[in-house]
Image (cartoon, rainbow, N blue to C red):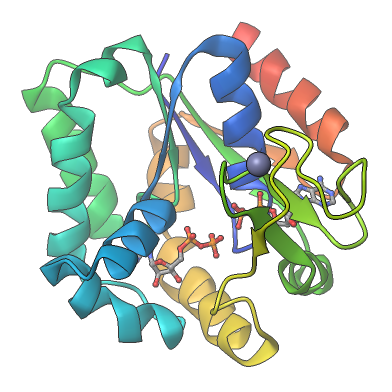
Length: 215
Ligand code: ADP
Ligand code: ADP
Ligand code: ZN
């Protein structure tokens, strides 16, 4: 099964994608994670993306399309993939359709996580992840079971994203509303879009997604 999770920054895409990956063996394709790795490694893509990401703007479509095209063609994606953070513009959605057709692949479900703006800001400002395994946490909504120790891998180092601050978040929300939201009608017209209440707690959201995948 190949699916897309769409939602504003902080909607819970990464959290849910990771759970689906564990449960169904699908591969999580997070373009945000791929870009952060490129920035860390200082690759040409990373060098170009760094200041754009810090400003909360979108990296050019052509770069993103190339990145995902190569990734989707890799063997592990045959097990099924979850797109988390891509497509983010209508041209990216069109390019995705074209590359999937070329590779003989199709999309099964497009799932929108709807979360209101105040909750998004609250989620993003409390977000942190395990430095070693990438497990996601939140200061209020998902603390490690033992303070300061990752539930998944036992590591004691955590990190916060440079763009998870109030000022950058404003630009990211604007980018979502202006550039990403138009892909919702794009998929709705094709009859592929299912919207769910992303305000619910994590387990309830997971159950809603599982019902969609089963149906
Ligand atoms: P969020 O958790 O806010 O949804 P991501 O981790 O998906 O954020 O993305 C972080 C940043 O990486 C974005 O603000 C943007 O600058 C860049 N980015 C990620 N995916 C894309 C994409 N598909 N197109 C353009 N820019 C992207
Ligand atoms: P996205 O990938 O869409 O940007 P994340 O999955 O990283 O969002 O979630 C953002 C933050 O909100 C994280 O700290 C995460 O632990 C928390 N979070 C995710 N889903 C929920 C939820 N349903 N209720 C409360 N907090 C959540
Ligand atoms: Zn960990």
